[in-house]
Image (cartoon, rainbow, N blue to C red):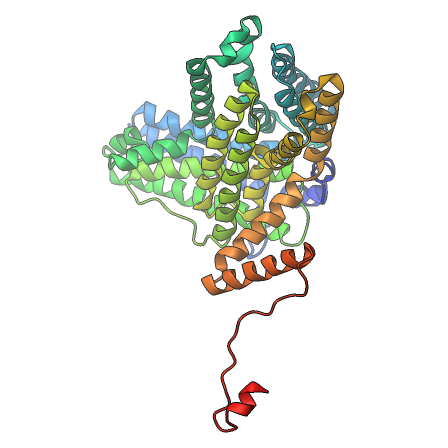
Length: 466
């Protein structure tokens, strides 16, 4: 299943969105699924609960923090409820995409010597970015939240690197300056972590210090009286119930139908907004953090995280001698490996969600590693003038539009199966692979696995020899 087709095809997303938009029954029925009207009604009820706490004297700073997250939930739900005008989607998506492409393409081409491998990689990335831009224009629910998320995911690291290495276009010696390159990589990693993993970092750091993720809210929660606590507990219960309803509705639909990755991402953005508010409310109330009841896709997500690290660091090593590309891919490898690892323990993130993130952040790394290995074996043809650059760019663009999803999916299943095998099964599998390779290389008939035959003690030695 080609990535370009999945992005450009809406699949059955309109059916899913229409189901979310249907009016809810007066009393919620089992199996009815999430309904946007009911979820937005609950947002209003939760806001009233926060207002009651404010009227009772709860500190403004704490309530403002909770209210901002409630506003984020509302925006994410409204985005799914309302289609945006085509002209509006076209203007914002096209403008953001064109601006994002200028500097990342300019820097490797204008560098001296020209960074041909890195330029080919950038053209491959930009091809996927423009296809996704076309898909967002075709998706009626595309809003600023989705555009911001996809723009940052696709373009942040490229533009940070372009800004950092722009001076090297004027002073080429900078690309050979080790401190300059290392600092550029560290800046890139820091920006990526603070943009995409700030919440996870906060939780880990405060956990090491035996503190909740939001110590300020925990301190404010100590001043709550019984009535305030009751109001906030009602809000927390609603947040968790609605989050679970949205997660289950999406999972049930994806079990039988194809959901466009962009619509799937919009639902994930809403779920993440619920999750953030839930964590803040639990810190305010001083209750233990709830975790997902189950995490059935943990092994598959772990397999994908391991594969991500292997592929990304391989690509960085193969980028030699392009200094800018090496820094870019090393920073990207560090971030994407840890980002995929952060999804492993989250039960609200499905195998498909993790695969979509893999395709966004590191799916191209598979294509890149293969192309760079081919380039090395063919005498660095990408470095040989404009024709080599053209061949490399077109090849990477075409492969990036087709391979990352299917290959990533197949690899995740393969590694997951490998992890479930016993050591003896792994040894037998490797033996069979080696035997097949031996025969394929002309080594003769397959050798039989060594299983010593025990003699038949009743028939005597002659039976054993026969």
